[in-house]
Image 1: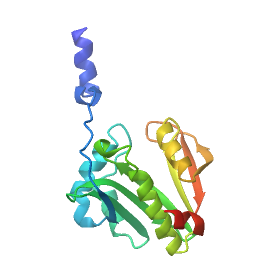
Image 2 (image 1 turned 180 degrees about the horizontal axis):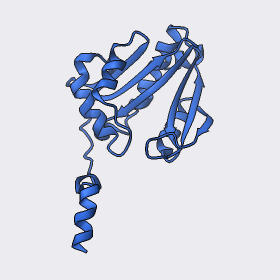
Image 3 (image 1 turned 90 degrees about the vertical axis):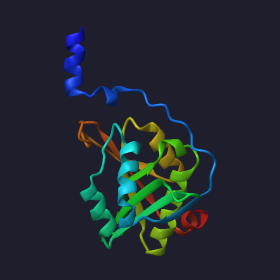
Image 4 (image 1 turned 90 degrees about the horizontal axis):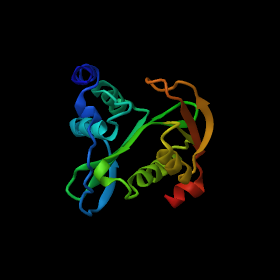
Length: 184
Protein backbone atom coordinates (compact mmCIF):
# COMPACT_ATOMS: atom_id res chain seq x y z
CA UNK A 1 0.00 0.00 0.00
CA UNK A 2 2.84 2.41 0.79
CA UNK A 3 4.27 1.85 -2.69
CA UNK A 4 0.97 2.93 -4.25
CA UNK A 5 0.97 6.10 -2.16
CA UNK A 6 4.52 6.94 -3.29
CA UNK A 7 3.52 6.40 -6.94
CA UNK A 8 0.34 8.47 -6.50
CA UNK A 9 2.35 11.30 -4.91
CA UNK A 10 4.74 11.22 -7.84
CA UNK A 11 1.91 12.01 -10.25
CA UNK A 12 -0.39 14.05 -7.99
CA UNK A 13 1.33 15.98 -5.22
CA UNK A 14 -0.28 15.35 -1.86
CA UNK A 15 -0.76 19.10 -1.31
CA UNK A 16 -3.27 19.20 -4.17
CA UNK A 17 -5.36 16.51 -2.46
CA UNK A 18 -5.40 18.17 0.94
CA UNK A 19 -8.63 19.71 2.13
CA UNK A 20 -8.28 23.45 2.53
CA UNK A 21 -10.15 25.12 5.36
CA UNK A 22 -11.30 28.59 4.36
CA UNK A 23 -11.67 31.12 7.14
CA UNK A 24 -13.98 33.96 6.07
CA UNK A 25 -12.36 37.38 5.99
CA UNK A 26 -13.53 39.89 8.60
CA UNK A 27 -16.36 42.16 7.46
CA UNK A 28 -15.11 45.03 5.32
CA UNK A 29 -16.26 47.44 2.65
CA UNK A 30 -15.53 46.85 -1.03
CA UNK A 31 -15.17 49.03 -4.09
CA UNK A 32 -14.62 48.36 -7.80
CA UNK A 33 -11.65 49.85 -9.67
CA UNK A 34 -9.78 49.26 -12.92
CA UNK A 35 -7.34 46.35 -12.80
CA UNK A 36 -3.92 47.34 -14.17
CA UNK A 37 -0.48 45.90 -14.79
CA UNK A 38 0.70 47.17 -11.40
CA UNK A 39 -1.75 44.63 -9.87
CA UNK A 40 -0.20 41.72 -11.76
CA UNK A 41 1.67 39.97 -8.92
CA UNK A 42 -1.26 40.13 -6.51
CA UNK A 43 -3.63 39.10 -9.31
CA UNK A 44 -1.55 36.02 -10.15
CA UNK A 45 -1.53 34.88 -6.52
CA UNK A 46 -5.28 35.40 -6.22
CA UNK A 47 -5.98 33.66 -9.53
CA UNK A 48 -4.16 30.56 -8.31
CA UNK A 49 -6.18 30.56 -5.08
CA UNK A 50 -9.47 31.01 -6.96
CA UNK A 51 -8.83 28.22 -9.47
CA UNK A 52 -6.78 25.62 -7.59
CA UNK A 53 -8.35 22.74 -9.50
CA UNK A 54 -9.23 24.64 -12.66
CA UNK A 55 -7.84 26.64 -15.50
CA UNK A 56 -5.22 29.08 -14.21
CA UNK A 57 -4.11 31.96 -16.37
CA UNK A 58 -0.39 32.55 -16.79
CA UNK A 59 1.48 35.79 -16.25
CA UNK A 60 1.70 36.12 -20.03
CA UNK A 61 -2.07 35.75 -20.43
CA UNK A 62 -2.84 38.33 -17.74
CA UNK A 63 -0.24 40.72 -19.14
CA UNK A 64 -1.94 40.41 -22.52
CA UNK A 65 -5.39 41.07 -21.01
CA UNK A 66 -4.18 44.03 -18.97
CA UNK A 67 -2.52 45.74 -21.94
CA UNK A 68 -5.08 45.27 -24.73
CA UNK A 69 -7.03 48.34 -25.80
CA UNK A 70 -10.13 46.16 -26.30
CA UNK A 71 -9.95 44.72 -22.77
CA UNK A 72 -11.92 45.79 -19.72
CA UNK A 73 -10.43 44.55 -16.45
CA UNK A 74 -11.73 45.35 -12.99
CA UNK A 75 -10.92 44.47 -9.41
CA UNK A 76 -12.92 44.57 -6.23
CA UNK A 77 -10.75 45.78 -3.39
CA UNK A 78 -11.17 45.71 0.35
CA UNK A 79 -10.97 48.72 2.66
CA UNK A 80 -7.25 47.96 3.15
CA UNK A 81 -6.59 47.93 -0.63
CA UNK A 82 -6.30 44.15 -1.12
CA UNK A 83 -7.80 42.56 -4.23
CA UNK A 84 -10.78 40.41 -3.27
CA UNK A 85 -12.09 39.74 -6.79
CA UNK A 86 -11.33 40.34 -10.44
CA UNK A 87 -12.93 40.23 -13.87
CA UNK A 88 -11.45 40.51 -17.38
CA UNK A 89 -13.40 40.99 -20.61
CA UNK A 90 -12.31 41.25 -24.23
CA UNK A 91 -14.59 43.38 -26.38
CA UNK A 92 -15.01 42.04 -29.90
CA UNK A 93 -15.68 43.98 -33.06
CA UNK A 94 -19.01 42.14 -33.26
CA UNK A 95 -20.43 44.10 -30.31
CA UNK A 96 -19.91 41.37 -27.72
CA UNK A 97 -18.02 41.46 -24.45
CA UNK A 98 -16.37 38.08 -23.81
CA UNK A 99 -15.82 37.50 -20.10
CA UNK A 100 -12.55 35.59 -20.09
CA UNK A 101 -12.18 35.21 -16.32
CA UNK A 102 -13.88 36.17 -13.09
CA UNK A 103 -12.72 35.16 -9.63
CA UNK A 104 -13.36 35.97 -5.98
CA UNK A 105 -10.96 35.15 -3.14
CA UNK A 106 -12.30 32.12 -1.24
CA UNK A 107 -12.41 34.05 2.05
CA UNK A 108 -14.53 36.82 0.45
CA UNK A 109 -17.08 34.60 -1.32
CA UNK A 110 -20.83 34.75 -0.67
CA UNK A 111 -20.70 38.54 -0.20
CA UNK A 112 -22.03 39.58 -3.61
CA UNK A 113 -18.65 40.51 -5.08
CA UNK A 114 -19.08 38.59 -8.35
CA UNK A 115 -22.52 40.15 -8.80
CA UNK A 116 -21.00 43.55 -8.09
CA UNK A 117 -18.28 43.02 -10.71
CA UNK A 118 -20.84 41.79 -13.26
CA UNK A 119 -23.08 44.80 -12.52
CA UNK A 120 -20.14 47.15 -12.99
CA UNK A 121 -19.37 45.38 -16.26
CA UNK A 122 -22.98 45.81 -17.44
CA UNK A 123 -22.64 49.56 -17.05
CA UNK A 124 -19.20 49.64 -18.73
CA UNK A 125 -20.45 47.60 -21.69
CA UNK A 126 -23.60 49.69 -21.98
CA UNK A 127 -21.55 52.92 -21.92
CA UNK A 128 -19.49 51.56 -24.85
CA UNK A 129 -22.52 50.51 -26.87
CA UNK A 130 -21.81 46.79 -26.45
CA UNK A 131 -24.96 44.74 -27.01
CA UNK A 132 -24.18 41.42 -25.30
CA UNK A 133 -21.88 39.56 -22.93
CA UNK A 134 -20.77 35.95 -23.26
CA UNK A 135 -18.81 33.54 -21.06
CA UNK A 136 -17.98 29.86 -20.70
CA UNK A 137 -18.48 27.80 -17.56
CA UNK A 138 -17.87 24.16 -16.66
CA UNK A 139 -21.00 22.00 -16.80
CA UNK A 140 -20.22 20.79 -13.26
CA UNK A 141 -19.87 24.32 -11.85
CA UNK A 142 -23.52 24.71 -10.94
CA UNK A 143 -22.90 27.42 -8.33
CA UNK A 144 -21.31 29.66 -10.99
CA UNK A 145 -24.12 28.83 -13.43
CA UNK A 146 -26.69 29.84 -10.82
CA UNK A 147 -24.86 33.13 -10.25
CA UNK A 148 -24.75 33.84 -13.98
CA UNK A 149 -28.45 32.99 -14.40
CA UNK A 150 -29.31 35.35 -11.54
CA UNK A 151 -27.35 38.05 -13.42
CA UNK A 152 -29.33 37.50 -16.63
CA UNK A 153 -27.25 34.91 -18.51
CA UNK A 154 -28.80 31.93 -20.30
CA UNK A 155 -27.17 28.83 -21.74
CA UNK A 156 -26.67 29.23 -25.47
CA UNK A 157 -24.94 25.92 -26.19
CA UNK A 158 -22.96 23.03 -24.74
CA UNK A 159 -19.25 22.98 -25.66
CA UNK A 160 -18.02 19.35 -25.82
CA UNK A 161 -14.58 18.74 -24.24
CA UNK A 162 -14.05 22.49 -23.91
CA UNK A 163 -11.68 22.38 -20.94
CA UNK A 164 -8.13 20.95 -20.85
CA UNK A 165 -9.25 17.99 -18.75
CA UNK A 166 -11.94 17.09 -21.33
CA UNK A 167 -14.89 18.42 -19.34
CA UNK A 168 -17.71 20.01 -21.31
CA UNK A 169 -18.58 23.65 -20.89
CA UNK A 170 -21.64 25.79 -21.39
CA UNK A 171 -21.54 29.01 -23.38
CA UNK A 172 -23.80 31.49 -21.62
CA UNK A 173 -24.95 34.82 -23.04
CA UNK A 174 -26.93 37.85 -21.94
CA UNK A 175 -28.10 41.01 -23.65
CA UNK A 176 -26.78 44.30 -22.31
CA UNK A 177 -29.54 46.86 -22.30
CA UNK A 178 -30.49 50.08 -20.60
CA UNK A 179 -32.61 48.54 -17.85
CA UNK A 180 -29.90 46.05 -16.80
CA UNK A 181 -27.18 48.68 -16.83
CA UNK A 182 -29.31 51.08 -14.77
CA UNK A 183 -30.01 48.38 -12.18
CA UNK A 184 -26.31 47.72 -11.62
